[in-house]
Amino acid sequence: MVPISLQCAVVGDAGSSFDVEIDDGAKVDKLKKAIWEEIKEKFIHDVKSRSVVASDLQLYLAKKGDWWLPSNELAALQEEEAETPVGFEKVPLTDATWSIHDVLEEMKMPNPGTRQIHVLVEAPKGELKSKIFNDVLTRIQEENARRFHDWMEEMREQDRKRLDQLKRTIERALLPAAPSKSDLQLGQDHLNLLLKVGCVSNAEETVGADPFWSVEVQAQVDCIQREDAFDAFITPYFSNALDSHDVVFVNSELYKWLPQSTYGNSNAALKPDGFVTHRGMYHMEPEPNDDVSRVGNSFRFGKADKALFDCLVLFESSITNHLGWAPFGQVVRYMQHLFPRGLGSTVLFNRTTFWLINSINGVVVRGITATWVMEGSKALFRDFITKNLSPWVTRLTAACSALNVEVVEGDAFLGRGAFGRVFKVKRKGQDGDVLALKIVEMSSVGRLFQEEDALVRAQHTGLTIRRVGTATGLSDGAAMLLSPVGEPLSYPTTSQEVKALFDMLWQLHSAGVAHGDPRVPNVIVKDGQRLWIDLVEWWGASPSLLMQNDARILTQSILHGFPEDSPDLELEALINEYGARPTRANLDLLASRVSVKLALTQSDN
Image (tube, rainbow, N blue to C red; front, side, top):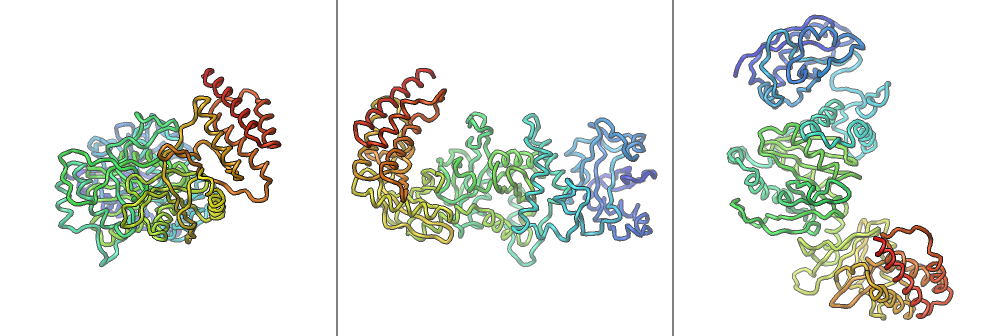
């Protein structure tokens, strides 16, 4: 440790600055206490500020460009409505675990010298008191701030409205992130704002509770120098913490699976280190052939499916000694792309520390820090994962249990639609046929039972998949087993393929069954046979109207994605004619016109 001299100044105090001598190996918290000893008399004798204590102080590096703030610019900075010097910035000193040397090294600052201001000190106004602060969600937007007590301890489910208000404030300030921003700059911007509004906290120890690992294990971890080796070491600990919840940790750092744009350019995709999800909600990849030692069966490698991004908790590791702005900025970038709508969760970690991070609509709104050896850290980690899992994860687990099936891990996801999600499953302990498990949330339970009724009515046709057993209600939804599992049908490109689809529709109609939603994606192929899926039972409508609606939906689906310069009156007339007289001949005429329309649009493109 080397003694250094830091010139400090209280923000808003027109008096002179003062000097604090301290070892550069001292922690930020010790610097705060040393500064407090220099200035506490000003507060003790001020009636409005008697409640201010050392922990209320906020410290900043006085940085101007790559240098320190010249002392002759301090007076101008302290004046009300003074213009900020060009290049000046206040860098918060908030992480109590960092030493002064760590901070200066991270910021690439020169050694403190003379005629410079090194540290700015902010103290609460008189009307603010210790451990009570303004409503962090409205004070940015409103001049008349509200105060409330112990906000961070209460910021749980009942505070979602307040968090949403904070999200909108940060979103206006920081999103969309400029592509030119580095991870370091992005992390600095977001973390500084979160610190400013009090949304970063240190987890409290739970005396007597299990740590994530022991001090002895931590000594082993400290010797690991490679990130892939560290990930291999920690994976079994993840599995141990999450084993009873039917979720798994998947290493994904080798695969580009997170698009940076809606166009999904794989070459520009991001490669997060991993994620936690249900064992049926990822695409498995083979274990890499590398020189990393992996012992046990808890290792999984793979990619996430875009349709299931809402079912992930993201993981990002770093081999660096400190989780500074750059790793945090990388996580911010990931969460903007991975969780652009709704809630998102990420664990950012290195060999000693982990962050538990929440976002709303792609905006990071809260961060909690802890260490692996801290008592209670194992439960803290586990509870964060389980509380932030998507309801679809617990719904899939409940459906498998109720129907005595298990997912085909690593290749289970078949697709999702407006009303549900479908997964490959097998009977537990059996090597029989693969079945499709369809699950829906509570708002779509009626829709699933309508589909079951439609399948029962169409079963005699042999043109649809069939239900296996009956639909089953769950605590927050419903589930149904279906067979067989096939491959999706490609969109038609020839007149023969168009005619084949309309022939399928006619066979269904001639058997007295309307589909309700006969789009191309609702056809699968199994052993060369085409079968309808996702039937809809429309109650109360006349058969001719249902068949006309089927013809219209299939027509629109086949021509989907092609520009419609003007309405095709002939197509509309043929659809109406089929509704008035639903015959094979009229449907063939419609199929022929659709084929012509398809050929014209293909030639134009």
